[in-house]
Length: 279
Image (cartoon, rainbow, N blue to C red; front, side):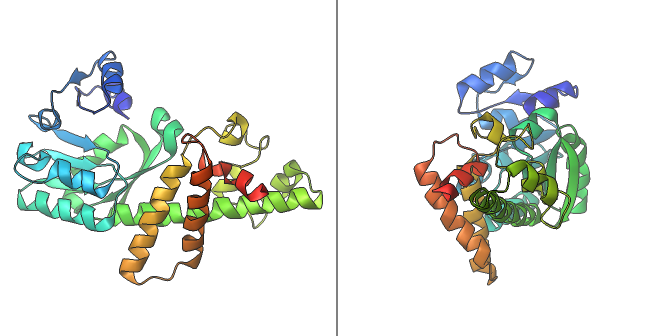
């Protein structure tokens, strides 16, 4: 994402706890910031991506946070995938400080990030979205305003709950086909043109062969790690509990991915769950 910001002609300051990635992008023209606050000072825009809501709040809030460090007129964009309540709390703090902010989680994984073809699901006021959109366009092919603050996070966890459920359903179907003697390529040929068609089948098929770019053809090395899918499914269940929504398949998918991540390598793609289903 940082590389695509540079390619678009922007001057970029970067900070990360991982020194290697900072060195790598600085070798391509970015400037090293001494701290996160340094990265957020005297700039037109701030883009963050952090593991969880507690990290986003720690980085943005308080006297030493990014909101306090940012200049008037700076647009704040958090591309983390976090809980809706945390996103709304940080956005409210930014608004109180007179700053525009959006939550803008992404979909597309490592390949889309490299290609600049990510989908951004953006929550925030219309004016904040208008300020953020030109920067997000440098990194994504689809930048969609989902609604007010927190709506981007809501869209992301709903989307990824569907994705997790669908990957399990597609994997179960291929396992059953194997047991019934139906060739995987024939199931793909039929279902990709029939009512079983979905992204998990046609773009990310969990068996080798039908989709050459899927992780199944690279020993299930992660394009989207199983641990990240589990994180999103847990966020979805927390949101469902908070909102009083009934999501039995989402709950079952979370339990299956919990089992899968316990037995798989850290860099295993989420589509590798088909191997667990095979037993």
